Image (cartoon, rainbow, N blue to C red; front, side, top):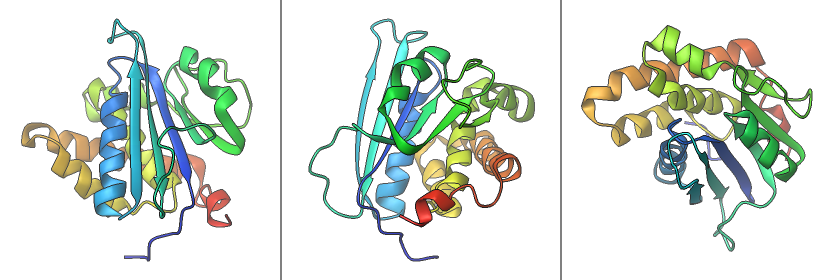
Length: 195
């Protein structure tokens, strides 16, 4: 395994609609980064009162050092899985930050600088279960972020899930990783390697 990359403070916001598995996505990624990779991680979340169909967000703050303030304020990555979430949270993306979006559900991105995949359609058509969409996202981020080791994150995902849904989610994770590599290119994570 490669040595852990030093991180001062790295902020990720997952956002979209209730029912898209955003909170689960944040928890699984946070657990993988903390327990599997050895980073300090804080996770905060909020969702609308109607939950399913309402707005939802989950933030991770990741650092090699202790984290003094647990909330995300200046995002390195915004993952937007709905147009409303993209519109609401894009202003929090810092200069040089990366917007990752669900290309079918965010038809009007606020910028032409983004990375997108049709996550929902991929989960439905390639995995056979639309609820695995959040795991396809996790797979794509494990390719995008140079400080994530794919095998370690996959192991964390498998340990966090009940056995009956483990195989389908492993398939979704691998699909996300493979398609991000194909669509976004090998050097997509270079922006963070220099920092």
